[in-house]
Amino acid sequence: QVQLVESGGGLVQRGGSLRLSCAASGTGFTIDRMGWFRQAPGKQRELVATTTRDSSINLADSVTGRFTISRDHAKNTVYLEMNNLQPEDTAVYYCNATAAVTGGRLFYAYWGQGTQVTVSS
Image 1 (tube, helix red, strand yellow):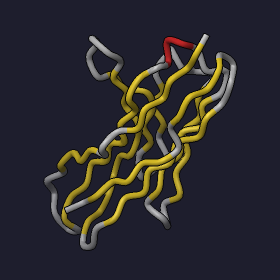
Image 2 (image 1 turned 90 degrees about the vertical axis):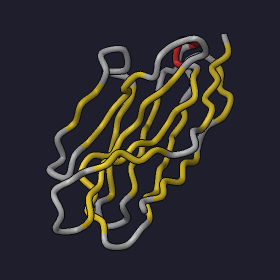
Image 3 (image 1 turned 180 degrees about the horizontal axis):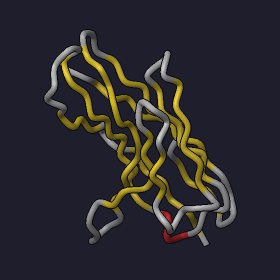
Image 4 (image 1 turned 135 degrees about the vertical axis):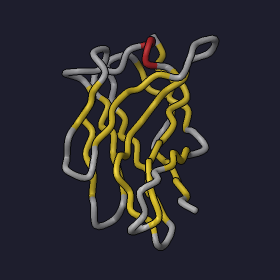
């Protein structure tokens, strides 16, 4: 089982910055993609940013130029640096990882418990 522990959410004013962290733990797994999704009240969960083992990055258009995703492969930790935050960025941010038993071919998705980001105007 892969466990994801998030940290770094909070309340910030418009134009401010926050940094989210997500550490994955579990033995005998190979993690491929790690990243962040978010869900605002009354809306569907949406992709924010993901990065793969080969450092391929997928970034939502709405955050391009403001958010940066990075990953420490040795620590199985992914970070989301969020700058110039806007009220529309307010949401619960969920860490996501796709992982398989080492040597296996079936990858499963794992989710963190979520961390609230609130941007005031």
